[in-house]
Image (cartoon, rainbow, N blue to C red; front, side):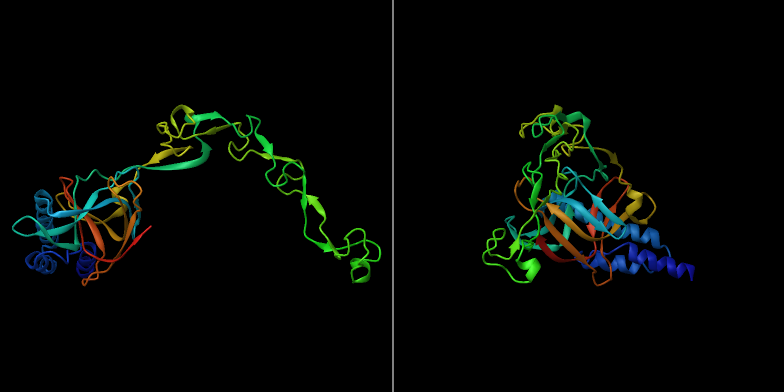
Length: 315
């Protein structure tokens, strides 16, 4: 029973590439049933990795973009600041080198795998390295109330006129009423909830601190200035948190083989195409019931395998 459970888990952990040549796919599927499961699977993965790397070497791919985020059953993998792998669709070429077919079911990773990057986790405190004097409140920490304009009162909800002989007293309006001018209803002034009747409010830019973080180096206010090196332009204090590969590992083999996933969705950002919206890919199960996985070897070579790209959308 234990061995059977082990086999089933390994079947789900390592996905076969549905778009691979028949020999690779059938070998991977057949070898899963052999006694030496781990060695057999690694042999199939080695063939898959070599095939994908050869396609990259020959340039038989069409650039799709750079992965910015991967959603897996074990959590979300983030690739901030253009740190994600560049991927592309495999293409077929004719004798003249012209592309005759794009395989949107087979992806290759074009650049070298750099590992999982750190992710910055911010607090609500402003970054101390890019502070500058607040120009909204003139470093006072408070400004004129934006709701009442400093008047301390605002119009409240309408109510029946309370003048003698009018709506509140008689239940009907008095056309000659001096207070409501025959309307039957009045709009009283109430204390402004935005400033609690004080006429000023805490400055929203500096939050009462008299200084605010610009996100630019040395607190520069010019938007063209380089980003603050401490907060990376986020304007908040925080720290870089390590994304551990082990937290997303779905399968671990020998000789350094491992697979991250299963991947159910990923977002691709344009490479060098400023202004192009990111593209989102949903991943459905393939015929073997597998989602996509990111396979890595000891030499840090990487490839994506398994699953079906169910839908695409601009974000």
